[in-house]
Image 1 (cartoon, rainbow, N blue to C red):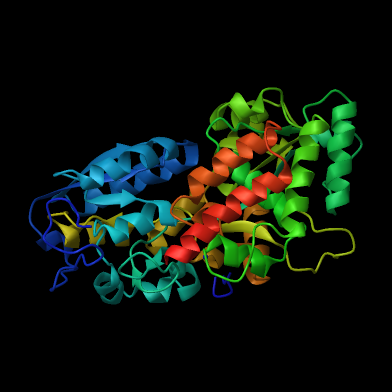
Image 2: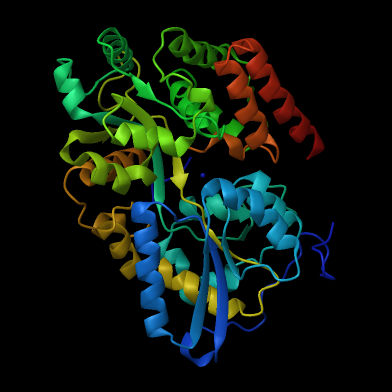
Length: 441
């Protein structure tokens, strides 16, 4: 993982915004903390995600019977909607999973609602398990303005990469192999459409799924360093370059050619990938978090690959692929038991936990090389992630860019895909958000 380089006051608090302080004396003997109840909010609701969390929670409580876990599990969308309100209440959870981006973790840091984890990181020696290039995705300055540097506010369990799932049986029926180049990929989409198949599943009712599809297309024409600059909200790049306009134009062309399922803008994310799992669709652009569910649904008929490079790039070229870490686990500033919360985070991210993640069909972000990757789809996923990491090809999620970019780009992509906005207007909308944030920093 060492190559992973690209990723007001709190109500009821007397601390100024951004100045939440950790406990002065860290205790790591969880068994000696007395009877404690920890409320944990997570978004591990799908098959393999839910399985690993249940097993690790059971193991934790067996080892530390003095610490009772009260788990609240919500979908990504529900968590994003409710977490902000929960953190501002009088009794927030102790441990939460928070989206790394500025609109979530950045704002929580700014409001003083999360505790810096650096004292526990030192006590548990997390830097030996996690290189700085991973921890940067959970680092913010105390005022929440600088992303990728400063205090550590979370620790992730999983690595993520957004790639292309494909139905092997359908490709075989079409007389095709997994595409080696981007031109091959688009040719496969065209052949699938001509054969009466659904070329690609997409459910964009939740708006964020199209961010991953656009990011995949963007990576074929926009240099990786420019995407990284934009996604981290740093100065020096622009959304309105010809390359970004081209990416938006290419994406719209897929709509014009009928490459997506009917009504994709009004279909939910889960129904779309589940439909792919039922054998409807040749391709699905999505993240490695669907590994366990799609393996269960399609068995040996499902494969996963990194988005192929442009023509002439060659098999040894650096991939450009969206990815990084899963949602990190953080400690809230109002937790009455931060040492117990830190012990819990340490347990679910330990080397033993990484083995549990592997067995339940997930992609562990630490000790990845030490794991025995499962055959089939699991091997595809581990290989893809390893390639992206070793070739320094991961670029951050685009919605990280500004505190409002998640909403801005999600809505803008819905309009773009509905043909309510031109590619030029689409990029101008993103640039306006990016420029407003840059000027306010």
